[in-house]
Length: 426
Image (tube, rainbow, N blue to C red):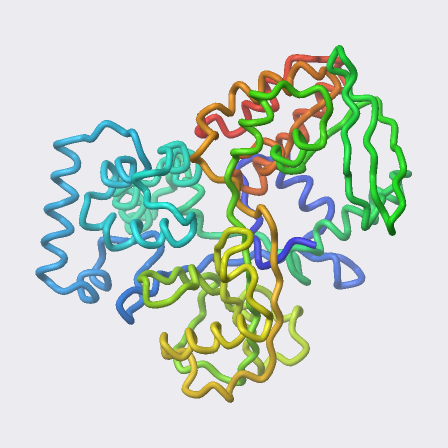
């Protein structure tokens, strides 16, 4: 099950066709449906809502005030004239938005999500996730809409529509699992891979799994791995010490979502996501599940709000009890004036995800050495976000699997096409 809302958007027609094959737009039973949604996302900053991405429009100017608007404009045009060498994520953002806008909408939020100041994060994160988004792109997108022009290229961060399964993002993978089983696939649930058996020539001959306290061996002709690279290498025999050190040093961020049920909200929030700026709260953003699909709710009169927190394994947030996390979420809803009193919270639910976000610092700078070693195993294909340690979108992750299958069927051992998905990352 995929935790939390996850939009389905792609410029790859192969991916879109696959999604729609699993969940058609219409189905006779009324359940396997892929809803088309008009994306609405904003930023909550200093108690006011800003467009996401930030737009240079009347609402932004009104929220900021004349003086702040002039400072933002001056800072942005300065960034156009004096480009910085891009040695960090901070350099990347300042070059595209100016220092003032960066300090307002990117600096503290990035540190909250990644646990590191942008000065200490590789610019590759921006190249992969933000791609062509910049002050120029924001302006161009705004004018294209005003003059009803169709842009030649739509940046992922600017996309206005997306698809979403009727019963939540996990429905896509539940349907996929059922279809795979119907076609003969054997799916082993609640089974943890504890060892990857690697022969001297690099060939992967199988994996050892643990289920209900018992170990069993699964032989394989080909191994497609989407598990975190750190765990893959840790469970593999015959790995040189220097490669072990690279894998062990790869950083991740864990994810917690606290779902809170309330009867009403003080603010009108038609958004799918709201990004929360500022250090006065620990949440990075919140979602309103009602706006994704009402079919996920037992009672449409109840609002289910999901507060998203980012942390590292073992820290105070990660080790907090569910009750303590619910209390934190309630207090932050009060701080942001979304509710009036704590007793308005009727129910809550907490989900935790380990290694949700592969990060771009520490030993990541040596990722190519690790990749080259893994590619020596001709029948091993590393796919997906954690399988390649790339903060990919869902469609890029799927494309790595598509490319791997093409290589398997053709007998190709050169995996550059698999690693080459989403080339903006490198």
